[in-house]
Amino acid sequence: MASEWQDRLDAACEAAKKAGAFLKDIPSFSVEHKAANDYVTDADRQSEEMIRSFLLERYPSDGFLGEEESETSGRTGRWIVDPIDGTTNFVKGLPLYTVSIAYETQGRIVAGCVYCPPLDEMYTAMEGQGACLNGKPMHTSGNPVLRDAVVGMSFAHRHEDAGKRMMHVLPAMRSALSDMRRLGSAALDLCFVACGRYDAFLELHLYLYDIAAGALIVREAGGIVTSWPGDKEKVEENGNVFAASAAIYGGLYDMIARAEGNGETLKPDAIIVLGHRLNPDNTPSDDLKRRIDKTVEYWKETGCPVVMPCGGKTRGRTRTEAEVMKEMLLERGMPEKVIKLENESRTTGENIRNALKLLGKDALVALVTADYHLESALMDCKEYGLKAYGVGAVTPEGPYREKVYAQAAFMKRMREERRAQAEKLGISMEEMDRRFMEERRAAHDRAIASGMTEEEFMQKSFAAMKQRLRDMGFDPSVMED
Ligand code: IPD
Ligand code: CA
Ligand code: CA
Image 1 (tube, rainbow, N blue to C red):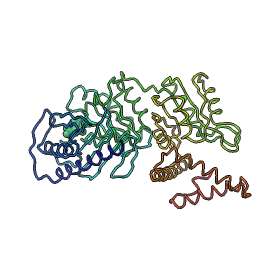
Image 2 (cartoon, helix red, strand yellow; image 1 turned 180 degrees about the horizontal axis):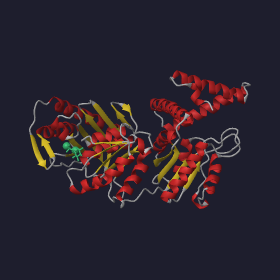
Image 3 (cartoon, protein in one colour; image 1 turned 90 degrees about the horizontal axis):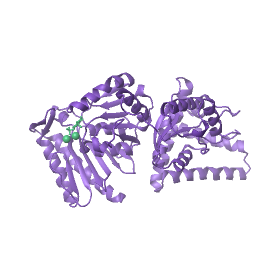
Image 4 (cartoon, helix red, strand yellow; image 1 turned 30 degrees about the vertical axis):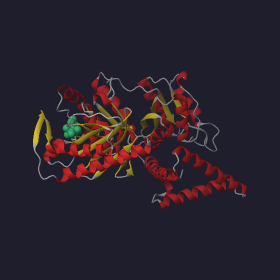
């Protein structure tokens, strides 16, 4: 199946590039008004015709839905195409317009590309395979802080009701966010969320051809795409796009829901809080206290029915993190019945897999952890198929914050290396993690069997890690306690 989709994706990219080259070099075109504030040019029609004939010649049994001409049905899949997304920009000579092509089969969009000719940027995704920008894997932003978020939006200038709804939430967005942008191509807006240039993108009243490829690209890059708070229909049905990185989704959704006054704030099925190494005397670190305080605050806000503290025993400690966290939650007034304590594993990946077993793949989870850890933890959720959005406990400014952010950057690079290795070996990240842990255990056992003490082994491993940090251009002291 994947190779069939890969073929379709390759064909889509070829078609988008052909249409893109045509649009970029077009000497002149005629412009008509389709409706108020809505242009169409003969370049839109010609681009659509180029894409249609290219794809249907290669896949004659596929159907085709393009923005400009009537739909043709097919036996196999269906192509969903916007031949120029951002026609107003195109007409005005603003270099931000795209060609968007998605492939749908059995009711699911499984492959898609968005090509921006002026930037020569090709965004692609295939269901379950991640998303790329010009062939390189890309991810949504890891920033959980609204104050630091840049969000794409529109003024919904073509639709009176949608326009009023957008204007209603603008003041709240203006005061809560770092900044907002209006690009003029919804497909490109979505791709900017996918590659982390934007934290989120909100627009109302779009059509399937505007968002089919872009929504898949965002989801495959680790983001979340739904309709707006309070809307009953799915985003593919009403075109009210709420696309965000998993790190900012929850906070932004609640902010908009409050601003609208009628939209429901998010209600997760469970809150998972990830632990942090206890102090040597088993007392909680300040970092862990912040995560617990954030959990209690978020639980009070949402009234979520299940809260799971996760974290096992670090060497030299006699208590598990989960046990200590449960005590802290009880002390802060959380009733015992909402706290589930099944997760005492030592790695984030293991905790997430256990949570998944317990909650099932349909549960929507709010994941609480420290801000610097959110990006990698949400990538784990995505990897293992747990539907999650982040709730970040903010680490205060100072040397500790600098250090943990540098650690996170190092861990991210290590993870990218392991992912590349897993891809090369053709195995899943879960299998890769398992092999990695197994190798570590085996190295430990060999060292002890050869007469090394535990302490010496620890020191040797630590020295190797510091060397790794140096080789990658990091300051090795960031890993010191
Ligand atoms: C438009 C663009 C624009 C969005 C409009 C769309 P078009 O598509 O995506 O950003 O705000 O609602 O209609 O008409 O240029 O294909
Ligand atoms: Ca469009
Ligand atoms: Ca269009």
